[in-house]
Length: 195
Image 1 (tube, rainbow, N blue to C red):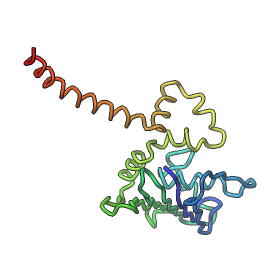
Image 2 (cartoon, helix red, strand yellow; image 1 turned 90 degrees about the vertical axis):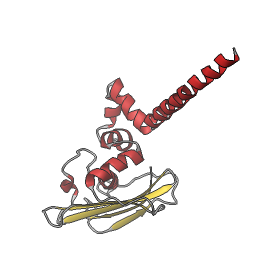
Image 3 (tube, rainbow, N blue to C red; image 1 turned 180 degrees about the horizontal axis):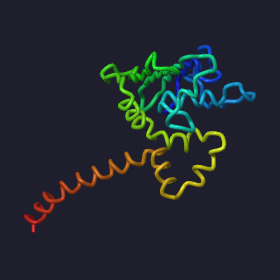
């Protein structure tokens, strides 16, 4: 997953709408003074992808800027040759209700999604990480760097499997094994006929 464009409004230090264009950048470093909004960029990306904060899967309303009643984040990101746009918004109260949208900008045959659960599942599939894996291995929030290092071997293995998409490799290996077994019996029959 590669971020391409981030639009943020009403999230922590980004009370006014801001846009960050990553599309033509290679390596990106987020640097600045304390309170300049570095962590807010990471919070915005996490909120867009997972409807969560970097420290909690609930309580996204905590991200709304002081004095603001709503926040919205739009993230364009590239995965496997396609560009997707995910947009989420929420408010302090019940109105307007939370909104969640995911669309593929490069393939109009991919149906857009507007269900929070469907979007969360699709993001986990596209990115190859659920919220826990993402925050442990990609975001590593302040004070939580040790989480990955101190994870049990089994948990660390699962996080790294997600990062490197080893589940997909295991699935492909199993499909190849089943395909090979399907040819085994006819091959044995041919060899028996020759003998």
